[in-house]
Image (tube, rainbow, N blue to C red):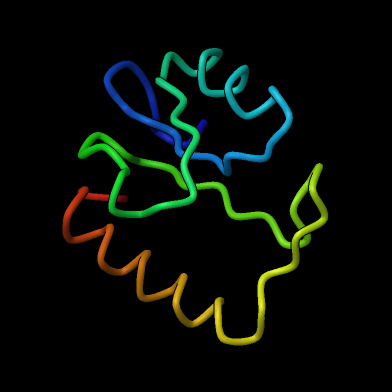
Length: 82
């Protein structure tokens, strides 16, 4: 549905329900649990961000969304995000 498939990686938060990994598998992708953008594999094509986090309830701070946008822009350059 999103143009993802075999060889693509879906990154999701460390604290997450198994549905992220299941959804990635259903699309033929690999799931990767990480909160550290430096650890994301070069095959990353989709990044799940949750606020508030589920199941841990963590809420991104006011300063974090801007940081996340920059991370996304950097990831597009490094990982060819579509």
